[in-house]
Every structure is written in C-alpha cells, then in structure tokens.
Amino acid sequence: MPQSLKDDYMFNLGLYTITIIIWGSTWIITKHQVSELSALHSVLFRYLLAAFLLQGILYVFKSKEQHAIKIHFLFFLLGSTLFCWNYVLFYLAASTGLTTGLIAVIFSTIITMNIANNAIIFRDFPQAGTVIGAMIGLLGIALVFFEDIQLFKETGLLSAIGLCLFATYLASLGNMFSKILQRKEVSVVSANKWGMTYGAISLLIATIFFDRNVHLPTTFPFLSGLLFLAIFGSIIGFWTYLTLLGRVGADKAAYAMIVFPIWSLMLSWFFEDFTWTPMKVIGVIIILTGNLFIVSKGNLNFGFGQNQNG
Image 1 (cartoon, rainbow, N blue to C red):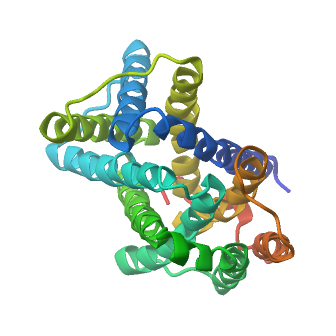
Image 2: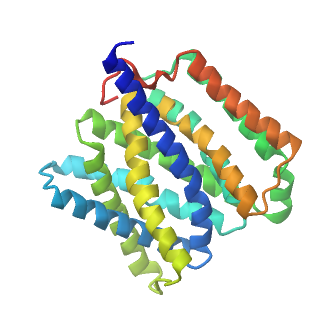
C-alpha cells in the first residue's frame, strides 16, 4: 500500500474511532443535564459555550475566511438542523424516562436517512454492499429495541420515539447541508463555528419569547458535563464526524451511528436501568456483523481515492 493511502486510511480510521467514542458517551451525560435544567436551556448553554469557544479559538488563530450571504444562510440551516432543534427534541426524549442507550439506538437510523437524502438531493446512490450492511445493522437495532416496544405502549413513551425519529431526520438534513458547504469548499471548522453560532442565537431568541425563567446550575456534575458536551461532544465530535462525512460520504460516515450505540448501551447498563437480554445480545452481534460486512466488502474503505470535499 502506498504511504499516502496508508496515511489517508489511518487518518480516516482515527476520525471514525474518535466519533464513536465521544458520541457514544454524550448521551448518558445528556440525561443528567436535563435532570437539572429544561431541554431548551440545556441545549442553549451547551451551544452558547461551544460557539463562544470556537469563535474565540478561530479569532486567536486569525481565521480570515469570508463568506457570502447565501453561505451564511446555509450556516443558519446547518445550525437549525444539526446544532439546535434536533438536540432540543433529543433532550426532551431523555427527560421522559427513555434510556439514553435506546435513544442512541434510535439515532443510529440516521444511516438509512442519509442514504435516502444523499440519493434524493445529490443523486449519489450507495454501493450495494453499503445498503446490505446497513440493513443488517438495522435488523440488529430492531432486535435490541423489540422487547421494549410493549413497554413504550404501556407507559406512553411512543411519543418519545417519535421525537427521536424526527430529531434524527433533522440531523440527517444537517449532514446534507454540511456536505453542500464542503462541496463549496467551506472548511468544516468554519461551517461548525457559524452553524453553532446561529443555532445558539436561535435558541436564545426562543428562550426570550417562550421561556425566560433561565438559571444556570452550579453543581459540579452539571458544569463538568456541560464542558464535556460543549468541547468534546460538539466542537471535537462534530469536527471529526463532518470531516469524515466530507471524505467518505454521508452514507458511509453515518455507519459510525450504528456502532456507537453499543458503547452507549454499555454505559446505560452501568448507570441506568437498561437490562441485557438474550435478544438484545443477539441484536448487538448482528449490528457488529453488518459493520464487518461493509468493511470486508471494501465498501467503507475509509475514503481511498475520494475527494476531500465529498
């Protein structure tokens, strides 16, 4: 293997791994955030902090990127779908009692949404192996989730599932806006900076009009969790994921969303009331099988020979 391809492989593999580790850990912290603060205000503080830090970092490093009004409109759409209202919906779902591991499992359906949106918007159709591997993974997700369906019907948590699915679709649209921006040669860091800024401004306006009763909890668990979510979950996590998306495509990058719920389920097992059953174990094994299928067929390929901008 030529050194350049090897370096490219290792870099993309690193992006893939970091995304899984970080985003597999954020859901459990989210649960603690909404136990002390409303969903709207929790997301508001997270993205106010993330936008402030990212704007400050790029100012210090004297970023000189200038963008047209049309690009800023795309930044607004990116912020609204990927850094704003989708998170409010996920936080609301977490506050209903739905375990964070299962929320992460629902979010992993973004891979099918990305495949569909990629085909509709960009006419970019996935390889057959990518689709087959995704279907195998989604079968595993269905098995992990199957035993809880009756519980949701009995406890009224079906609405929480609906919130998560709608939030996931908003995130998928955000992936598409990111891909459009990368094709216009806008850097991921710049897009994230402005997307998070516009997302935070949108949340601030909503707070002013609909919920002015704002307070910032000062407990150590809340503040440390807020820092983790803003720095790792938002600034670093979105940079690694959206960079990967630009390098290997939305359908392949989103496969990380089928893998990281396994880590989320492990954390949910330790810290929440998630219970492993034989069917859930089989489901996880099938998810991993789908992942191995894609890799073994060479469909994930971590971006060999692909353009940096998608």
